Image 1 (cartoon, one colour):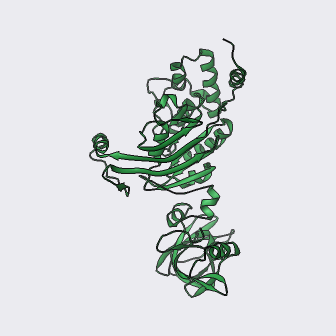
Image 2 (tube, helix red, strand yellow):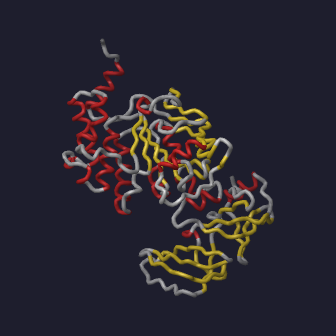
Image 3 (cartoon, helix red, strand yellow):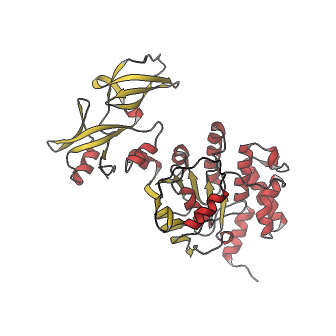
Length: 414
């Protein structure tokens, strides 16, 4: 049978070592919902270690069971890198497993390209998944682990060899191809797991906390490797993590989740600069944002915040957004990031509790206005002297102040 032109082009691309997808791999999740019924919960609990500590969750419990994910709507563009991030138990891994077909979808629709995937078997979804625990076959060599899925598909031997060696070269694990997993470090095993997924040439690449078992130095190295990898294998990524640093550095967009609900979707810069609510504001950013009790006032048509005896007028763009929503004067939660607070004269009074020397800066833990806050003070190569018990004055600019409703916890600008 004669191959059509598209098949020939695809074959040529593969022979050139290009792992990009020919078909569009847009992923759409429409009103996705996952409920663990009481019978499912009992089965899952039986598998758990009875001595393991119980996880505290705030998920909604209904007559159907525990609602792990609900009202999840997201369109992931072809070749986009999306990161699902949130604390343990927020539903991010469950969402990923529904995309993979490892969890049944209770309600809603999952589309990959133009195909509805709700009832499609995992093996037929054209996805590859990298797990937290590597899931390598211990009796097989690295080469055989990476080649296994291709052998099941009866791929020609020369094609298998080419793909495995190309993936190994990309991940810098060629010298380990003849070793077994037990002879590798954690970082090397994770590279093998990623390589096994790469050779499948998937339409969608799913990664479930792949770096959480690595130490801090290896995590940083592997994060950089994943960024490089993304530029070399042009496919759609869905990445799950509880680490907001990973989310901020890897994602084109990040989806912040809490208790089964999406809190905000946006680029890393958007969610950092314009958090939609108190949870997002406190979750994104290291150290986390400082929060104060303050009062939002409006004088001569201009909004300002009053706190600790000082008044700070908000920036023009914030003025416009608050005016457009006709926000009333009210008590608010004021959010200011640690590197946006500055030392001054005649500001908000505080007392130094702890000072942490971080090299290029000092992190001051300060008691002020009944709160414990952190201030990052650059040292600029000078000796910093902030003794415990010292009194300091703090201030901030109007363009870095975030005002949240005390009732709804939502950002009043949005």
